[in-house]
Length: 420
Image (cartoon, rainbow, N blue to C red; front, top):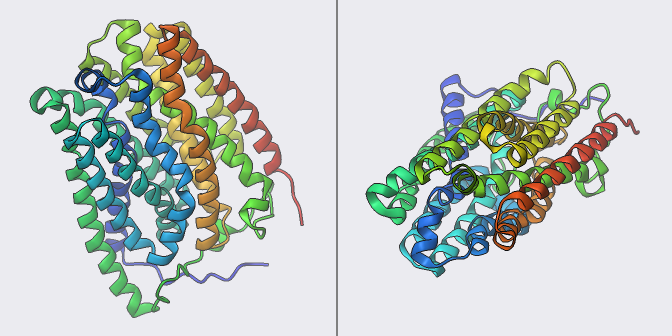
């Protein structure tokens, strides 16, 4: 039976374009605060005396927030509504960026906690924006969203070290608050415009999230699981998605945090060169983000996930055994990171029957995944410190990449099961 389409009439083209720009700016800020510090981590350690494990915690703290606070963030979104939650996300992120740049070690960690708290809200609300305003173009918009996440991390990876040469690491890290404030101002203006348009066509119920994903996105297609009517926690498929995302995030954050240091230690690169090489890893995620929706037209999303997991394994093993070929591994890793994010986010939205189910599914998948993966940067940093090199940490990443292949294969099998 077809689910009735309860969404409002299409938004005007100019407004839809402005909302898309706002989504892109939101995405630019959702991961870039986490990649601001790695390019200048050596300066931070010299200035503050942080150990490798402590430096890894700077990335792990917000990732842990992404997991542990996903459920409170979901309730906040339900109470405040989508648009206010976006503005809160961006203003809070800006505050956290400033706090970590003006204090000592306590300021660093307090700032990262504040940043992590508000970016947690953004993780879920971004998918709600996509489901509400762009459900007719899920693949393309999810690709653009994922690409924007990586453009943000590329910008901070490439520019923070040169800026630190001019302003010091504190000034360079704090300057990125301007990007979040710009995005907050734009979203406030565009969402106010959207509210006026929607009020004329079909007034919303205050405090609710009534928009429903269109039938084409909500109805299972041939070969897909048809258990969407159950709550997310009772769907094995959703738990497998959480497992895929958890392994993916462990690998992603371990490499994102330590890739500049790996380049410097194993290849003798300077800080700026290592930061530029790490930014290459981030920008090449655009290949996966934009390419995945195209390839998904030729195969099932779950099959594509298996192929992307293989690319992650190639990347990890390549960095372990042949680091001099880092441009090749940056290509394979870039495709893998951008592609996995895009496919997982698309599956979350497309498997949800309405905005509230989207919110709950996204909360479960991202909450567990980020909680389990938060140990990545800390564990790899401690393994490096205890072993005196990068062989042991990269071996761990390689093993987990192989495990990702296995879970993706199980997910593909589960996706073919048809139940009543």
